[in-house]
Image (cartoon, rainbow, N blue to C red; front, side, top):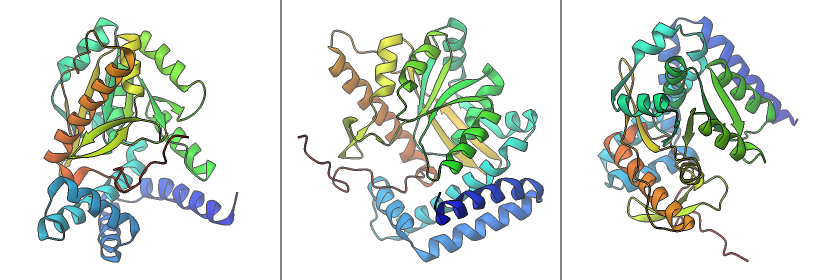
Length: 300
């Protein structure tokens, strides 16, 4: 491990331990101040967030885009503030601070019927908080985590999510897709953050009027198991987290598998776009996303 990796690993370790011991108002003020300082510095991540949000809210360079970007940085740091403290929350706190405003019947039906469900969400709100709530209600779920650098940081994230009741699989591992299939066939919930194509070989979709790619795995899982795909909206309010589970995407009929995956993935992207448009300040996308920003290399 390099010196820089060691420092990052140590920094996150200190964050996880220190914030749980400090009074919450102190932590909240500190992270808000850090967010404001990060926004004013206008580094690469903030500039990319602004560019992504410009596709959502328009007003390129105008006050609406700037206020949304500023609030977006604040909510991104709020996510980290809560992530550091979430394992110490009591079950009552999880239940009271997350309100599912609609769609609980879709989740309950998927679990009670034994079909399981493929729950997909963009990088919005606090998906760990929602996942912890689902673990408390349904006895667990399975999810996939991107392998982070340094390795120690990835291990901390896995341990963190496991402490909330999640089974965590590594993105790109050989057995990950097979385990997801098995868990869905067991009637479990698979919860996936799916608005970014990490593999570089995803399904092309229209998203806010331009082309990008999103992972086809959720659609393929649904087609192979019969488990419905449900888009989940998540957003912050002063009192905590709010959410909405949308009705299952209709399974395409009479299409070959590749076309069915494409149709379902586009439906997922449309659901994400509707959710993000309602709460753009909660979308934490600080990486280039559209093909126009990161042209893909032509197939060899």
